[in-house]
Amino acid sequence: MPVRIELLGGSSKKDLPRLRRALSGLPTYIPEKATWKLIESWVETAVLKGQRFGVMDLLIAAVAAENGLRVWSLDSDFGRMQKLGFAQLYQQQ
Image 1 (cartoon, helix red, strand yellow):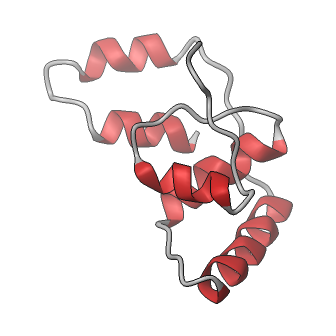
Image 2: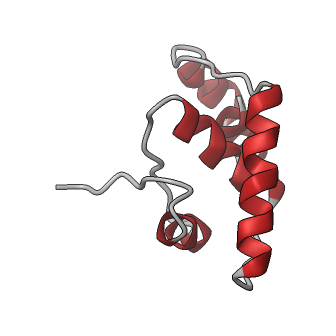
């Protein structure tokens, strides 16, 4: 769900209906209480290492990690998360 919201929020008015239809075919992962506990532990680790991340990026990474998924993103924050062991990035072959 966080990825869907992130993508829809960045969409143009013209592309929104088409994007919504395309995303409706993808699986939905809902964060649970354990997800928020994981994020909190990551925040503590990150702060101790001088790093900061946005809540939505942390949520996307945590839901992916909990479900054994890799993150594909052009956002360099996910690369920093990978270095801390929070996320696994999709590497195009």
